[in-house]
Every structure is written in structure tokens, then in C-alpha cells.
Image (cartoon, rainbow, N blue to C red):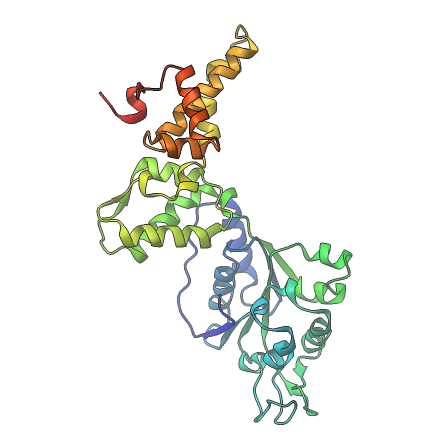
Length: 338
């Protein structure tokens, strides 16, 4: 998200079949028409901005301004002026008066993202605006009334920051009227196919583009540390270059190999559960299957397979020789050779 943008009324769609998300939507529907402050807590990229959109556009303020502010993107020395405005001559570069973002959001909604990054000095001024519902521009003497619905978002638990002395407890209780915890994408994997289809329809050059079952399994298995934002970017990139279908071979390497442990457990089922095997036999079973998986993932390119296992090519070939795999004597399912 950029520093800030303003939007007018538009439909907002939340795509999900996850029960946690459904419960959050139900809560929003119950409080949307109130003026209660909402605090969204969730990892970066989990979709907090989308929920802020939904709150505004289902509220009585939906026809008014919706101002989004990326607090972490604003320099600390400019933050007060950006939020509350300034009068002409308030500081060296203040050649004219300027409305702040709170004034721009009057009668509408303001969304303060990354509230956990706000300095303590600004926190006290923000609290004063929220309590009094009026503000003073930098360099100004006249109070300006503001009527805004406040939505904030944090990527961390603010109570931890309070304990560290980095966040005011009185501001926390003021913004935490309706807390909503947004689960990360890895905790709602059933939404991944829905989101993949949505992003494909949005970005694909052709309407016939589809994802193979193997590719979808890999997408679902991946942990998505960047959450929905990462998924969107990956699908957009795939959709722009794909023609008829997206296969697992087109996926980024970190996604293709995400479920490696599950594959290894399946391949080594006998080693893990057959009690008659000795320790050396179990180690050999694991080692052999690691070699086979690396060959499969590299399409039998030995140099690349060695890199995947973080070993030298000479050591890798010694291992292949040990298991009588050296002269491309690989199983048919590994390289597709007759």
C-alpha cells in the first residue's frame, strides 16, 4: 500500500469459505453502521486493508471519503503535518496552509495502517484528536472539528508494545473497541483455490487459463509467509506468461519444494514404521529417497540436484554410485525415461 489514497463508494468482495473469516465478516456486519473504532491485527499481507475497505463500504459513511494512511511509509518528522495539517509559515517549507488527512476524511473513514510504528509523541496527539474530535494544525491556534470513523491495523500484538513502553495503553484502549484478528493464509488453506481463481480471472491474458491439480496441490501446501499479497503476486506473474495452463513446473522453486518433507515421509513410510529395520537401514532409506527427490525436482540435472541438497557435485555422485544410480540408471518415475 502507498502512503495514502482516497476512494469513493465501490463494491468490496471478500472471497472465503473459511469459518474464521466468516465469523469476522458476521462481526463486521453487526458493527458496520456504528462509529466504533476497529483494530485489525494480522501478519503483513494477510488482507487487513481489504477488511478496512469492507467495513467502510458497508457502513453509513460509504458515500464519503475513505482515506488510507500507510504510517510506516511516512517519515517521522512529517507525520504530524500529514495527519493533522499545518498553517502557512509553521515551518521553513510551509509556504501555504495544508489540510491534514484527518480533515480530508471528515464525515468519512480514516484507516491508519501500521499503527504499531507510530512514535510516542504522535500517539499522544492522536489520542487527543480521538478524544476531543477536533485537531490543531501544526502552527495553528484554532481547533478544527473532525467527524471520522477510525480503523487501525497492526502487524503485532500491541499489548506486547505496551509492556515494552513503546505504545500508550490509553491509546490502545481507545482504538481497540472492536478487535478483529485476521488469520494468516496458512491457517485458511481452503481459501487458496478460490483466491487463485480470482487472481487468474483478474490478471490472465486468456479466459481459458487453468491450474493443474499438481500445481494447485503445491500452492495449497506452501506456507505463504507473505500471505495473500504474496499469493496475488505469484499468480499475477504466472498468469501473465502462461498460455493454456499453469503446471507445477512453472511454479517458483520455493513453492515446488514446499511439501518436500511430506513427500519424503510418504516415500520413507517403511523406514519410519517398520521396527525390524536397523538404524543403518533407516538412514540408507532416507538418504536414497532424498537423492531421488532431488533428481526429480531438478529433472535429473545432477549439478542442480547437488545444489538442492547443498552438497558438492563429487559428493553427490559418490552417493549415486553407492546406490547404483550413477550412470543415469534412474527409476522411470524420476526422469520419465523408458
